[in-house]
Length: 406
Image (cartoon, helix red, strand yellow):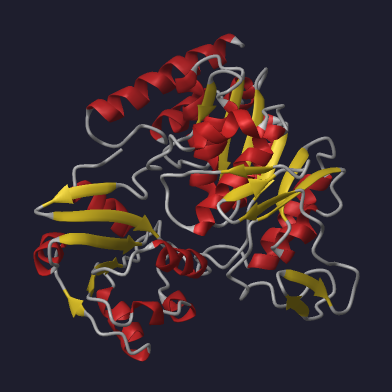
């Protein structure tokens, strides 16, 4: 690397280490921020010589990235932003910290995908899904699909692994020269009722979909989820045993296997490594406290809340909602979530915007109790399982209380 890049890398590592030592976080942002101030081309310099996969989408990025990094580890050391810092500062910090590795798997915020493709020249890009998320400050879903479509058109040599079940993702990737489709089913349809190509209605039946006004339709998937396993492009079925809950994580695992296959990793080699992933940046972590088995689930937008309800056991459940800058300040998205699966459970609510959540639960006829603190929630629940579902900063607050910060 150029001398400036070497100096910037060293300073980045030092800043990240000092941040961790001071208890100010994991250093995954500050290290990259300082490094890029010294060398604006640092991410490009650090990416040079590595075979890189990028993983982007509204939901599932962090988990799929963790699975893909585990699978790709069959071939050698893999650099990855395992704590979810998914903007260029986080990518820079992760690559600087990892040193010289032959491979990297990076989670990328969907808004930054075009820029990160430009700077890292990846071998593979995985596109998971697109749905509404923080619309008070983020782009509308069809606009994001257009950004992805434009970015891929500018890089025709990139291999794409894309979700055949999401019309927005298909439209973004369908003209790509090298594309492999995966299918894990899609429960959330509310952002893809209308075709992004022509504006006609999307028609769905038996897991298939097509536009009623133009040729856009669901492509045939080469990787599919079936029962408790994944079918590969050869038609072979692989049993996938995961520590992470929910059908959605089986879909994330299928995506990771497809990504690893683009690097030459066979599913039979990769599948056992997926079983070693027990927690992802604190998500799905289980903690014993005062006779309660507490499990943490992150849900940050309507689609991910739907999946969280599917993962959670029928047990006492704490919901926590904040509306700070990383969450988005607009909580009207709560009305896009169907909370009726919680009926009949003991439901506790807390967080900065608990009263917004309270009104929403009343509309859905879900009984609840408001608690001021996490400790109060633990005391209010009986011994046994306590499911905790929280949006981003509320999740981090609870992790801090459980002494599980990174």
